[in-house]
Amino acid sequence: MNSFSYLSRSVAMEKIKIKNTLVPWLALFAPLFVVTVAFVAAYADGDRFYGPDINPWDNFSGHILVGWALFVFPIYVSLQSALYSAMEHQNRAFAYLYSLPVPKWSIYAGKLLILTGLISLSHIALYGFSEMAGWLLGILKPRYGFQSYSMHEVLSKASLLMFLAGGGMIVIQLYISMEFASFIVPAGLGLFAAMAGAISRGFAISKASPYLWPIGFLNNSLQMADWQYSYLWIGLAVYVSGALASIVLISRKDIV
Image 1 (cartoon, rainbow, N blue to C red):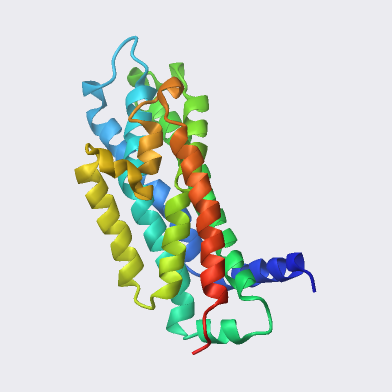
Image 2 (image 1 turned 120 degrees about the horizontal axis):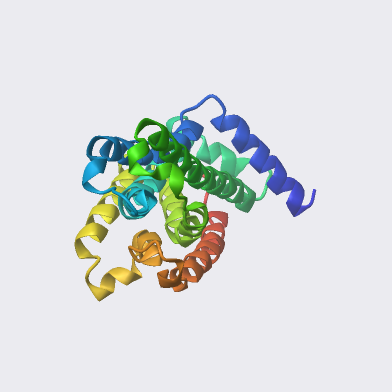
């Protein structure tokens, strides 16, 4: 059996495992939460921000994208990876998986691909929910002017590129969640990293944190010319190098 066959079987098995669990639903709930908070704030207090000749999408999209990149994205990735790996830890299944006559790298790679797919789904949902919320505000509060403007390109590109900039934290959180049986360790790390990032992001050293690369990329701006694309390439590089390092470490694991 070749490498592609091992990988495809591993991905198929992972898809079966998460079926009828909360794992796929979390990929939709996290972006829905962010958009709902922004929607409620806009609906209740929109008269303070929106007026004639002002594009309401600027303020509305900024709340969603910055809130997602700075707080929710790191916490969501940590919870998603911890919940995903907890299915194996609860049943003490990792020792069994590593004892199977398949390459250990395929077990990790299958999980990484599924987790990456779930997180990419959350960013697609973030864009879709944002557009739907703005459309609904245009109907419920026509004086805000949502129906007269749009930010399709900014919202769609920001959602995609923030996902790519977050590649480093995805690969880190998956490895930690597979290594530690306690749900608290990976989940707590993400929460701590998000809080520490929000506090220290004004310091130069904060640029080294993969958990701040999505907001570093966005640069608190909806102007695409202001985005810091270096964080995108760093995130992708750490994703690839981190995946390779994780494969090496997992391949050397003893079965216990």
